[in-house]
Length: 518
Image (tube, rainbow, N blue to C red; front, side):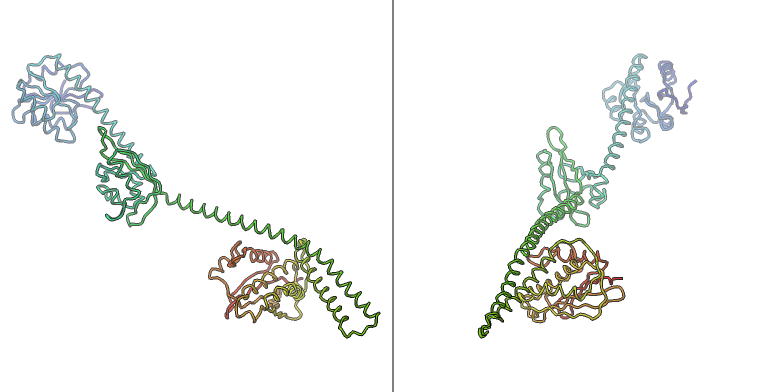
């Protein structure tokens, strides 16, 4: 039983709509196509055919041309105009055999033409052929839709930005990454000239963007490193990009530009280069430190060797005085006094050498209970030679009755001597040199004794607060930048603090604290 003007239940069988105003023709078509796995629908006029086509979505329509009211040409045209039915295959059935009639039918969207009276074998063959073609078209369309969806997902998931260009360099498509990196929406990018957009102005040179023009004009692929694109706000950002031409008939019709933002890569490269430069600088400084260490060891040996002849000089001076006394010669020439001065200076030189040897030797780190004033006085004696060479004075201002401190005396002497010498260096070429360096000791509180070293030199740099105790930071031409770092570490290891402040009248005040012994 066949139902007119109503869609049937959806089955796997392909649906065919038979449209003819002649019942005999419909009956013949039904008999011809029955039993072949098709779901057959019938319509006796054009209006009914359109209604059934919209509801049932047949795969194929066998459509009579000559019908009262709406003829087959108009039915076919309206089927092809509607998005819902445009994919239905149409085969015309007609007694019209004129070429112009056939051409008109094909122009309205039909794919084939069967002349009346028709033969059953011809109808079956043409229907089977067109249904196969329809299946292939449907499969191809589905595959294309899948490919388009896959392409869209790929483009959306890519981290690289992608621009599609026509042969004039106008952007035909852009993926989300390109929009995110540049700051323009895809709609804003579409239709823009890529080179002009990324130059920013007509007068700006193409520079690294010129390879895009070469790809578009000559059809060659180009890769560019460290070019510059622009954000939507006009700010530049570095990119690497490649440009691949789209070729048709051996001629370029457009190009695809793939780019990535290398801002982070450049920041990492700059940070790495900075670290390498700093490492190289530290290697040079450490080499210098090694040389100084070697010189220190040589100085200790030198002091040992010099101490022996100084002792001999002192002994010979005393022998000479005793010999002069036994001879009972008149001391008009002042020989006895001269020998005494020789003896005194030899002993003094010996004491200086002894202090140097004590300072440069490497004793174990031993904390002891030490008189802070005596400790600073010994340091003062070590600094006397430098003071005389710089024609400068060191002024000691020591609070009486200070409690003992728990320190390693050699290390604390190293700190105090470094600060005193720094102060003298800061004043060496200044008019304030006559003021000299002041060294003060005082009790800070119940836990600490404080030592202050005050100079009236050129003062500290503006960035001293951030960098002064950083290794290898120095403002001296021949400085190493490790003295204050070492001093800072020594005082911290004793539980004290090393600080500084700018002198209100010019110069610097360094202060360090030492813990009071229990």
